Length: 236
Image (cartoon, rainbow, N blue to C red; front, side):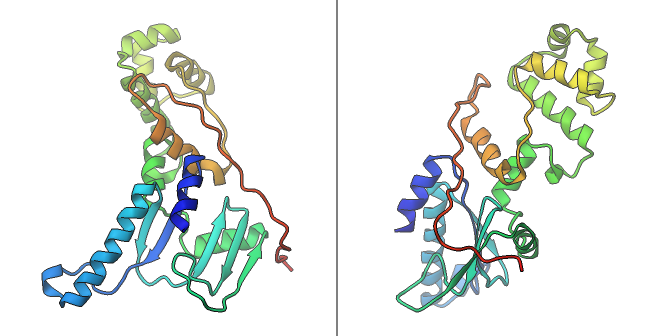
């Protein structure tokens, strides 16, 4: 049932990051396990592969047990319900819209550490995913964009009205000013944007999915979550 909803959401550009508890014996070699355990782990692996084929980001983590759902860093559901595998039992979930509480939960449970989102961020983003100084990251992104367009430093520098030596410094993360940055991005036919942090995973996933050989992207809309009529828990 959930796969149907996941597929529909992903088709609209929604990024779904799942954090699931690592089962016992997960890293053990299958030939060292009894047949029943090995069969159970293989079934578990097939479920992960199915979810990944849908386009979800599956993260297997040790020693996690909390039942949480966070939407756009704006809505939090927490309680006793096993969201991915619930049965016909009595459960409860509380809804929060308190930003302070949501940020605390995200940090405490490392829910911003999705492996695929981190990889996308390292490839396209300006954040700390690469562990480099911001100007170094900025220069590297400009260089990667130039290489994607198969432009030489000399030809791009000419388009931007810069000396090649200056462009080389910029790509190395040195002497970057706002003006030179904008000059180079104009030459690369890319546009800097400011994105809310909760939208960054969707933006990065769209870039990862949509980049093609000529360096252009498609333009699907990124949907926002809609509120519902349930009364949210307060911060008080």
